[in-house]
Image (cartoon, rainbow, N blue to C red; front, side, top):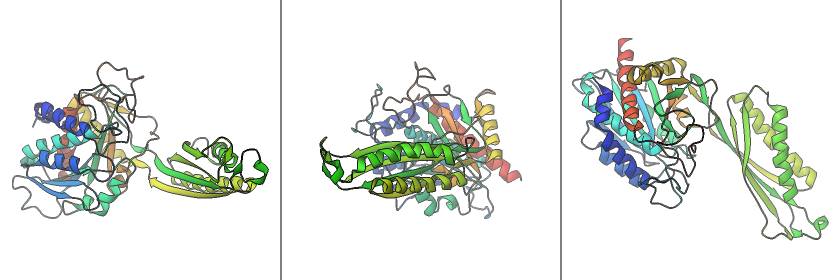
Length: 408
């Protein structure tokens, strides 16, 4: 079974699929055109396909074994492979022949590659289903970019789609910079941060800019909250416990000589420890309400806990590194010394099923690893040549993990 050769034979088809997805990016949980494209790409394969009810997800189950698993009992091993499908509200500036045809939308995080890779894995594994020692669940997920698509699919039963809980789960994610093309990057234990959102509305009393003493100005109060949050963070969180708070939006007023009634700002918070996460949540509420009181205004504070910490199972991560090195060469895998402050809803899968999320270098030709635009940039670009690699890697992870599970 030469999975890499099988994947290489699909290179043109996978690139074409990726380009079609890239031209017509869709956002959030509802990706009807993307779902239709995926279903067409899977047509004719020996898969049990279901679609989501709360989202346009696609779940496909491949029954392994010479009999397609029809005579197997309920203890057959199951491996889940996840590929996310949604794009970002970014206007593409990358100079590629298949650039987005939808203004303000772009596959800037490479999810079009993930989808094509997982389709490739489905085709490869279907070809070799007689040699699979169990079942494979293919999780085509919408809504990763802030919509908790994984949570929706879990609620609809994706982890048990094969008739029993998956034994292991894997996801790949391409990177447009930071690591050379073709490398597989990861670490056991925490690999990505928990992500929370802070939403603050400061309410005062508007007035004329010439007479602030007869108004209750929310603007300086909100400004002080922003600076106080950053300062207070350094006093309540251990210096050796990573935590990041970044204010990304701030809105107030309509004219330079009018004191507005309200000011609003929003922030993202990233942490790696549940205890630190709770400390930061309490700190945000205390700082905002305290500053508001001092300024004679009020603060409405909403703290939304979004994605939990993504924690890779150490044994499954080492297994995946071994597969990568066997497939692509002994220097393929790179172990991160520290986790990444980005966040992922695959964390919800890994909270219930041991597995790993790994990154694949997809640096575009002619770009430098240190200066290339990052994921989420309007200039982000990814190399099609990693599509067969990702498809083969997905397939090998499933085939080898099933074999190992069946042997235990």
